[in-house]
Every structure is written in C-alpha cells, then in structure tokens.
Image (cartoon, rainbow, N blue to C red; front, side, top):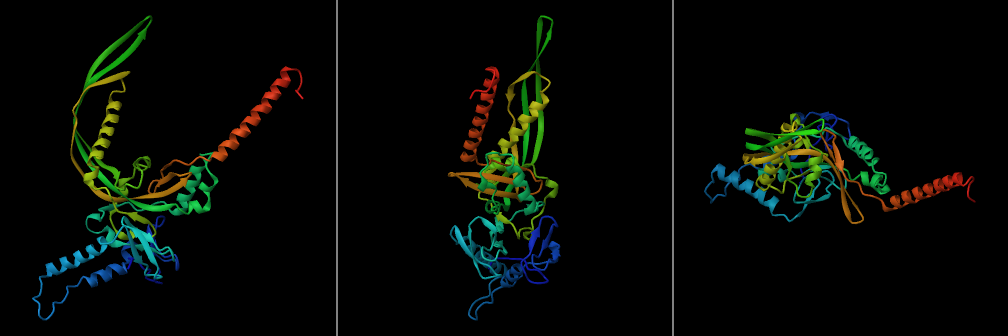
Amino acid sequence: MADTIKCPHCAANLKFSAGAQKLQCPFCGGTFALDEVESKAVDEMMAESKPVEPKADEEPKPMEQQNLEHLEAIEDAAEHSSDNVEFVCNSCGGKILSDSSTSASFCPFCGSPALIGQRLNGEFTPKYIIPFQYSRESAEQAFLRWCKGGKYTPVKFVSKENIGKLTGLYVPFWLFDVTGDVNVAGTGTTSTSSGNYTYIRDYDFKIDGEVKWEKIPLDGETRIDDALMEAIEPFKYSGLVKYDYKYLPGFFADRYDQSEEDLRKRAAERAKEYLDNEIKSKVKRYDSYKLTTNSTKYHDIKAEYALLPVWFMQYKYLGKSYYFAMNGQTGEVAGKAPVSKVKQTMFFSVALAVCAVIARFITGIIMGGFVG
C-alpha cells in the first residue's frame, strides 16, 4: 500500500500547507503540527517488522539476523520492480503507476496524496529538507506575471489546462563543501592620461591561503536542466530542517540518480567559478589584469543530501521542450517561454501596415498633400 498520513478527525488524507507550515485536511479543515500526527503505514511497518517465530523443527535465529532478513525483503521488493511500478491507493483502491525515481505522488483517480516511503529509505534517505514556503496559488500568480514578459508567448502556454501542469516538486540536491588551497599570482595594469601623455603602470599581485565554500547546491536529477536550477538559486539554508516525510504529502518528490561521487568534479568546477569571481573583485582596481600562476588545489570535497522545493513546469511546443521553474522557498523564477510563430507574423504584419501609413503621411506632407 502507498503510505499516507490520515486526519485524526475524519481520516481523510492530509496535505502539507506551504502557507501554514502545517498538515491540513482538505475535507474537515483541520490543521495539525507535524508532531501531532503519525503515518498509518509507519505503524503498520513497525508491526510487520516483529521477529518471525521459528517453526517447531527450526533453531531460533538471532534477533539481528531476523531484522536484517526482514529489511532485505523490503528492499528487494522495492528494487525488484521495473522502471514502472504499480501501487494501490489506500483511499479509493486505485492503482498508481510511478517510475522508479518518484518518491511521492498523487492518486490519479481520487487526487489523494500518496507517499511511496520505501523509495527514500537507506542511501536515498535525505538528511535535510527545505519545506515549501510558496503555495500553488502563489506559484500560478508568479507564472502568469512571468508570462507577461513574452509578447510572443502562445495562448495555450497560459491556458488553464497548462497551468494545471505546474507541479510542486522536491528536487534532490547534493550540498557540497569544498576546500581550496589558493595560490594565484598575476600582473595588474593601470593607465592614466595627462596632457598628451598616457602613463601605464604594471603591478604584481598575489592571492593565497585556504578558502572554504559551504553547501554548494548541485541537483542530482538528470531529468532537470542544471542551468535552470542554478538560475533560481540561492536557497536560504537557514530554512534547512531535518528530513521528515510529513513535509511531502501534497507534493511530488524525486530521488537522485546522480550520486555524490558523480558530481564531485562539477562541485570543484563550481568552486573554481566562485574563486574566479573572487579574483575579479580583488583586482578590479586595475584596468586590466593577467594571471601568471593559478595552482589552486581543491580537496575535502564532501556533500550532504537534501530535498529542496521547486515549482516546475515542462511544456512542449512544436517538438521542443520549454521549462519554467520557481524557487519554492524564495520565489525566484527562471525559464524560457516558447515563441508563437502566428503572433510573430501578426505583429510584423501590423508593424509593416503602420509603417506604410506613416510613410504615406510623410510623403503627402512633402508633396504638399496626401497622395490618392
């Protein structure tokens, strides 16, 4: 069964409210702090995890071995599945088809939030999570404001049907700490003019020492564009809390398909970008500069796994995919809207017509009257 969190009053499925930062019941209107409710599925799992009684003709197994076998059976059942896995909604009995990366989903029949808890177990259990701060209504308003900036945006792009595809998604991120032993040297040049003379001076500079970058965010999901995620940074890490599955109902969540090891090189590259910006800020007093040495070494690269909130939409137009993303904590938006060829053609047609009228008007003035 898919794991859900029940309302203590009416037994309906609860959803996490970004505005209230509590679990809310869409039926009776009840609101509950996360520590006020427990997941039925968790209680059931605890009951199921009791040691198995040995048969009469068997030697009893050590408690540790019984628990280990039970956990292995749960993991085998989760991992034995193909890319598409079927789950049963415990509200209406409907079957939920999910891919192997999805950790939280919705029932397509009754709309109830359903958590697939075992997908975030073991190595896929996040250490931290930043809960959503922006509700769906706020995300839709931000999307519409963003769309107004594109005068050639297709009508269907801002349709009610398309806005319905806007999804609250907890994106898997690795938060990297990187240490750098900086060793940079170069020459900065200034030029000043006085009368007919220009004075050029060169200065040697050196930057060295140890520098640390903390919590460089790299998304661990190959299906999401990295540049899009970088565009909605930064996240405010003051909002990081210990992971609790109760923040998930009402939203989608993916588990990573790129490990910490897979992203270590990219983390070092991001650190190098930060160092380049730092160098530029330190040598901005020069008109130009040239590095003669840069033997900086990056080490102690390690990461912690977290789920970060993103409102996300994918849209296909004329065979191409376009994306919109909004930081679910800060409200920062990014993306690229499609361009309607019809709107472009209409705009240029109108512009040409207006230009033609203006040209005739000017010609009429020059010729002493309007040309018939």
